[in-house]
Image 1 (tube, rainbow, N blue to C red):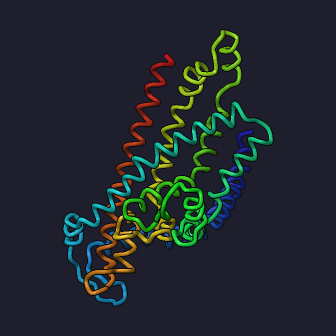
Image 2: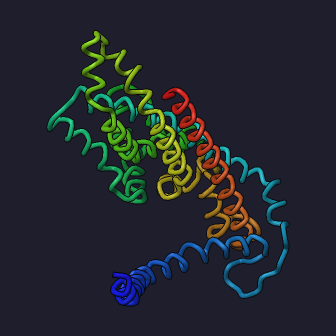
Image 3: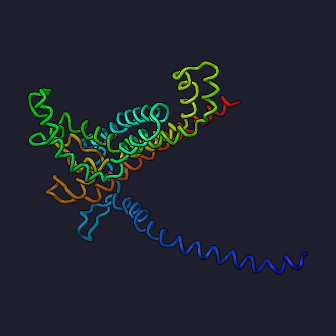
Length: 319
């Protein structure tokens, strides 16, 4: 038995090496593309952030942390950073809360084909490109010939057309609501998937004990959904921090920078400058991107810490 096992061991090792070789060969194209389009741009951005470079010439002058010092004193950057935080602090609770309510209705109240219909309707905007939706909505919300302006004025709801995208007081909030509508279906799907983890027998036992719908919601559904809530909040916050495509198509950050978030600020500084003689500043824009990336990482770490606290609390309650 020992000699037979020893005789077959080299053959097994050879087959194992052959299998691993094929695995690595199939992984190689993806690894190369990831290195080219993810890791290289990431490390290059850190290097460019330490240089003064316009992006068109080979001449780069190393300036160290000068770009970061200038960035810390730039009111336009901090204003755009604040608007990005508005997308998180206002947009995330709005979207997560509304999606949870609708998911509970679609899962527990509306059933069958009607539920499937509503799920499809709410998910359709997610499938469309943000840039396409942005362009279409600029025509829909146009104060001169858009259907929304026509409806509001013809029904007497407003005396004059509302400039949703061209009024500095409304542009950011209009973009936030449109971004929420565009990605609402994804958060809804998250909640619907989370609701499937609630064991039906819990509801049956609670109903036999005389618990009403509200009591079942508070004492069964919400506690079970709490860990999922933290994950969904993390995903939604990350998505709200990256609203470049829709805002660029809707307003381009205007009017008067009133809807400019950090990503639009970076794009404008790097590719569409309106200062410094109109010369692109790739190094300065890279510094803004690196700082924003670090801020996003800190937010993600804080949310992960919150998730751990929730998990620990549930473990203590389970004991």
